[in-house]
Image (cartoon, rainbow, N blue to C red):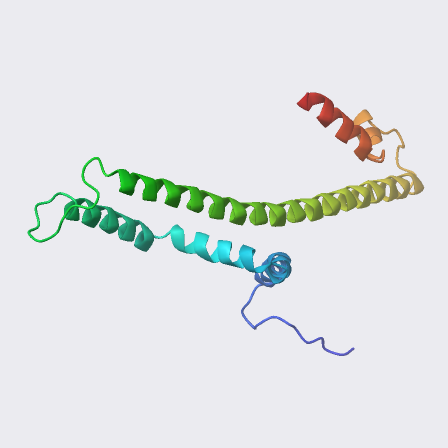
Length: 178
């Protein structure tokens, strides 16, 4: 008998290897989606990543404080170009908020699309697992009967051996949502 080579590191448990492999597959879904991004999606993702930083918050706070200080008229030689109540600053902040919101929404829409794809994959895996488990229960029950053990099935086992009707579940969920 030939010795099998392990694909694991000497002290790495099997569980760690499996978890790492699953993580790589999950990341690959996002990676595949990232490849298909157009320039606006890439820009929105990049900007969204930088907007959510302490640096961006600090920059905005400094900008607003400087704007207000420059427009108080207290600094000799600098004429206030946007005196209190800072109408121009209000307009600039409003425009910034509009653009930030749109950019973040673009990025969230793409992230939502990736999440929807993962959810669809998860549903297919769950349906397949349900079918396989049902089949295993049927085989185990047949083995049980073949061994001559008492063949009386309880109500729960009878229900578990039935194929899951995905359409009926979907209809029930849609009815509950109304």
